Every structure is written in structure tokens, then in C-alpha cells.
Length: 323
Image (cartoon, rainbow, N blue to C red; front, side, top):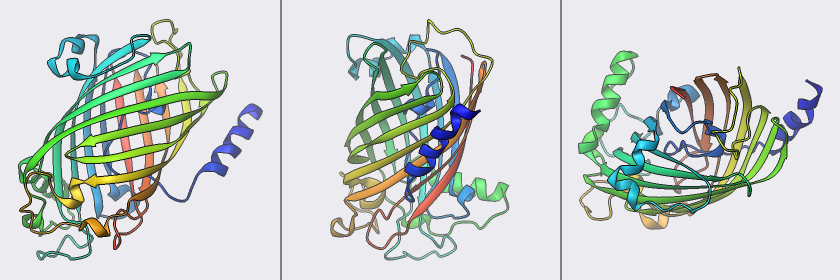
């Protein structure tokens, strides 16, 4: 294990005191599965970090298979001509609440209640020769009461015998979710199957959120290169690694804070002048892949998203299989 010590030291040194918490994204290179067909379930909740506010929970169910190439929404996505392409579809549900969920009144200066549900159609193109990966995603769905955020949180709090929320009648009103996202990742440093350091860039445009993101991704452990080709790889008995992804966001619009673009009747939103246009975030975790089983635990956090908000964190669990 002597070989691992310098990489663990590097991980500790670059791990920032700020981090990520908003919207599950399974397309990052650190969540790579070396197969073109698998199934994954992701659940994250700020209960793991001892809070119940801001981005309070997310559920993500994903299926990747070559047959999704024929799905009609897949035809709207772009990918480079060269490289191996994966095709996937996912359902995501997000919930957001203010700090004091036992209060029925609007909590001025805190985050509004918001729920969103949408279908994600995505493609990932890997160019092993150039150490690059391009991902395109299309999200289509709803934000507002129709997304079922209140019912979801009430059910979960009933199961764990926790405080029932009282203020969902003040939530962001129904509106359309239509978002397009393009990610670019490029590896610039690697050491065999033990270390990978890559750049990350992302652009989101649409009615749910508009923002640009840039940062780094570090993976250290024992794993197949996520920039390799999946079909040519033998099956390892076990892969394990730590990862860390510090990012910077430039935020243009966020419907979970500012309300939908088309329906402006929400009873409470964050004003444009109070939005934080620059946020810092980080995601770090540990992944084990046992042949056909993927297991992950991670922590995320983010700096203030608006003037009167607070530094916030969540944790999450993920399981995948079938590859």
C-alpha cells in the first residue's frame, strides 16, 4: 500500500472546505461503470449530515442500455462521432425546504419549498485515445405541487417518525422543466489503475436552472480507467477508490429559488438581487465495485446560494447492478 500514500496526501490537500448539494448527477467520470448496460438507484438526504433544510432529498433511478439509442428523445442529443457511446434514461425527484419545516407561514429570507420531477435522457461518448468524455443530457418534467414533493417528504418523515412539514402550501407553483446540459471531461494525469486526475466543465441551459460549472475530478485507489473502452476490459474481482470533485458554479437562474420561468404566481421566491452568482461546491466519496455490484457512499455540500442562506451539506447512497 506504499504506492497509495502520496495520492491520499494529494486528496487531503486539495479537498476544499466547501462543496456540492443540488441535483443528482450520475454522469461524472468518478461514477463510471465499464459496461453499456446496467441499472442504478441513488438516494441522497441531508439527514446524513444532520440537517433538514435547503436541498433536503433526491431520488434518482437510472437504466443504461444500447436499446435506448432508438428512444425519440435520444435523437435530440448530440455526441461526437468518434468514440464509444452509452445511452441512458433516468427519473429524478428533488425536494427543497426552508430551515423550520414545522412552521406553516412563509419564512422570509429562507429557501422556498420546492419539488421537481423529471425524465433525464442522456448519452455519454468516450474517446479513449484522447482521454476525453462528452455527455449530453435532456431533462423534461415539472416543478411545483404536481411533482409530489410534499407527499414524498411526508411519507419519508412518517417512516422515520420525524417532524411533519407544515409549509408546503407555500411552495413554488407548477411550471415546465426543460433543460439541456453538456459536460466535457478530459484526463491529464494518470498512474496505471491507481490514480486519475481530470478536468470537468459543464453548461446547463433551460427552465429549471442555467449555470456554467468548472473544476477537477480526482480518483485514487484500484480501478479501471474511466476513460477506457468498456468492451475490451476483463472483469476485475473488485474495484475500490476514493474520489473528490471540487467545482465552481456561475449561476444564471434557479427555478427552485426564483420560481418557474412561465408561471410567476409562486407566493414566495428569492429575488434576483439576492441570488449568489458564484458558488463553490465539492463532492467526495468512496466506491466499491464487486464484479456486477456497484456500491457508493458520498458527502456533498455547497456555499450560500442566496444572500441569507447557509452553507449546506447532504449525504447519499447508491447501488447499481446488472452490468
